[in-house]
Structures are given as structure tokens and as C-alpha cells.
Image 1 (cartoon, rainbow, N blue to C red):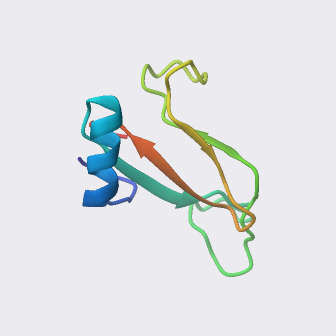
Image 2 (image 1 turned 60 degrees about the vertical axis):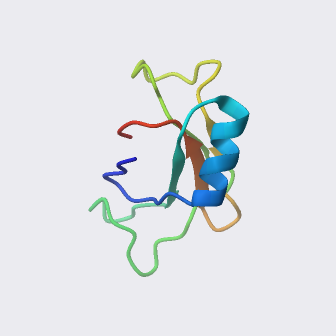
Image 3 (image 1 turned 90 degrees about the horizontal axis):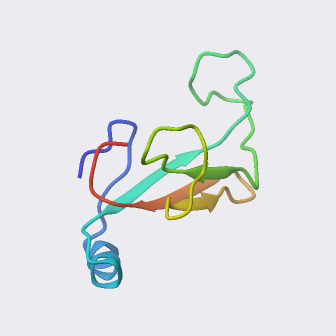
Amino acid sequence: VEFPLGGFVDSGAAMAFGLSTGMRGGFVTGTTFNDVNRDGRLNNGELGISSQLVYADYNNNTRLDEGEPRTFSDSSGNYRLTVAPGRW
């Protein structure tokens, strides 16, 4: 699984995902944050944003659809999203 913006495959979790869905997948991890200087990077002093919806837009229609994986960022803005095989 290739994750151009970061992430990794945890073999135990990937196996559980595969057994429950019939697909191999992995995780995408990251942080939602207030990009004060708009440089696209998390810098010192930029705070994470909690409770933000994060999802994999499998059909690229800019809307969350049924069956697309989703999660919410934690109190520090961090998230971990289980995804199917592919490029995200």
C-alpha cells in the first residue's frame, strides 16, 4: 500500500482489516491543524484541531459517501484512518 502523504501498514491490524472486509489495506495517519502561515506544514505554535472529520474519498466526489472510511481527529488533532488498498 502506498501512502504518498505518510502512513504505514501495521501487519496485525492489516490482517484484521482483511479478515473483516476481504480486502488488504492499511492506515493513513496525520494531524489536522490551524495552518496560520498557510505553508501546508505543521509548524511550532500551530495547534491541532480536535473533532475534525477525516475520510478517504474513494470516488473523488468531495463528499463523504456510505462505505467510505472515516474517523475524527482526537483532542490534539491526530487521526488514524483505516483504508483499502490504493493510493490516497
